[in-house]
Length: 99
Image 1: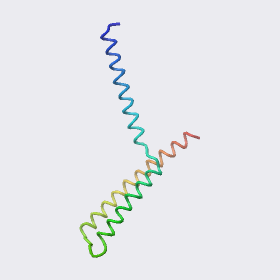
Image 2: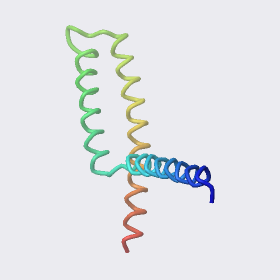
Image 3: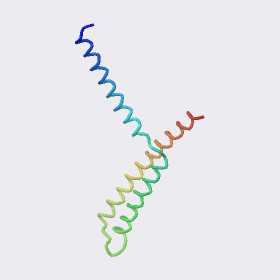
Image 4: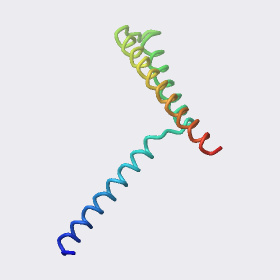
C-alpha cells in the first residue's frame, strides 16, 4: 500500500468521523422534551398576553399594534402546536422503545 493511499484513507476516515459527529449533534439537539416545550411556550404566550393587554386596552391602546400583536400570537400558537406535536411524538416513540 502506497503512503499516499494510506494518507488518503485516514483523511477520508477523519472527514466521515467529523460528519458523523455533526449529524449526531443535529439529531440530538432537534429532539425536544415535552416539558421544556410546554414551559417555553407558556413563557412566550404570557409575554404576548401582556403585550396584547397593553396595546389593546386602556389609555395606551393602539389598534395597529394590537392587530400586529394578535397576528404574532397566532403565529406563535401555530408554532407551539407543531412543537408540542413533535415533542409528544418523540416522547411516545421513546416510551415505546423503553417498553
